Length: 312
Image (cartoon, rainbow, N blue to C red; front, side, top):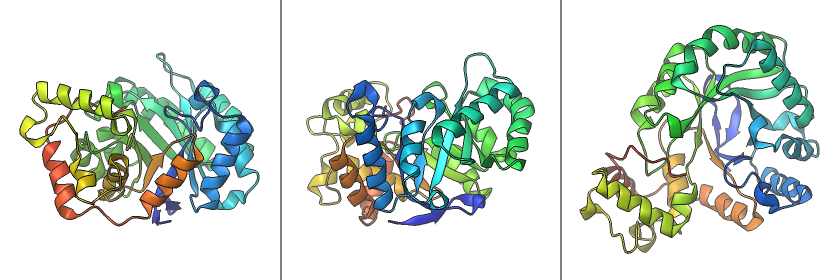
């Protein structure tokens, strides 16, 4: 497992992180897995060298994460969690209560990185002035080690909120949507974050579009129709087949994770699953070398104008 320093936090983090949300929620979505099986899945990842787990109040997986962490050395595990934001702005008291509840569910005295979850551009000023000071107080009290913020990518495709956040100097870590289908965060977020030594967590590296051939084909057709992808660059009969046929990758998902992993400025690439074999396959992916330069350049060229999709 590769490890990187998470920006100015100084935390040594595994480049592959366990994502406890997403379509699977560690297998808890539609009760695909028992809680015991989901706990075992987290332990499998930890024992393979992953030391970063991302969960959230909204995911309803904090207790599972806590149960797994309780069976290993807490001091060697980095937990990221988040406070759910509603349509109406939450109060400082609600933030404090949410953190208290997360600590209880996680069975820990502190959270390494605590985020505002899915902050929208129009909410930013309120949370910067009214809620950030509360988070800083909790940080001083030792309940939070580092302060983070995540975007609502589907409602903020241009990364307007994070473009502000990475320039304000108050956030230690941010979570941004980025993948080979939509690389817009490169200029708007990743470069400034790197310059300001901010930790970067990548979400949506692989979601349904990049793991389901029919959905990928439909998404590419829409991008062609919107003028965001040149039809000459894509074989719709076998989308992105060159990734495997060239020998560069074992699958589209394999290429997609490595594309994000080796993007300058990224630290942790989140990967979610409820299936042990899928977890093992992703672990193997993160051990593979970088994609050939020509393949990466081709992916950047194909999707250089893509703006309207998240890959979810």
